[in-house]
Length: 186
Image 1 (cartoon, helix red, strand yellow):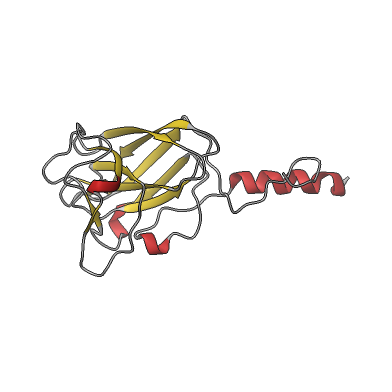
Image 2: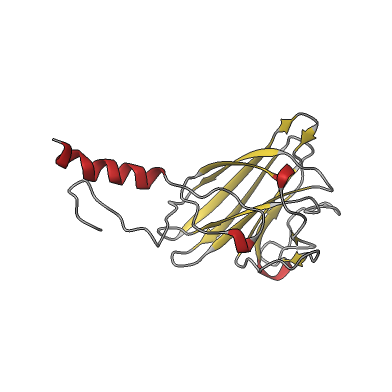
């Protein structure tokens, strides 16, 4: 009986694995495969990434101080062509309130100490229109075989916890071998 359940348990444990949001691109060790995630920018390293405008969405509404808070980033890849929609909701913890800004880019440069990298030319979608504890949503066309980076940032110095969901796409980790219920690799 245990021999029959082992492949199923392995498949389930792989499906539940995910990467936590990190502070800088050089800290990314795996792909995010969970479409629901949570993070907290309070303990983040610093303001490593920012936007003035978004090449992929020139009409994106960004406030003058969008993206100036500390941020976290995750790397995703999709199984098939899709429209990825990312929704982030700011929350609070103690005196910290997240005023979220969200942007997706096709690059994730290694951040030099005390230098902010601007992602204007590789930005695919961006949003920062609500206030503290608000909800921001972006959408962008995603293709299989391409890495995408989601930046969870904030307005001015607003830092705090957030939750996010990624819909419209199936997220994958191309480094993981799929194990099917019958025990064979996919």
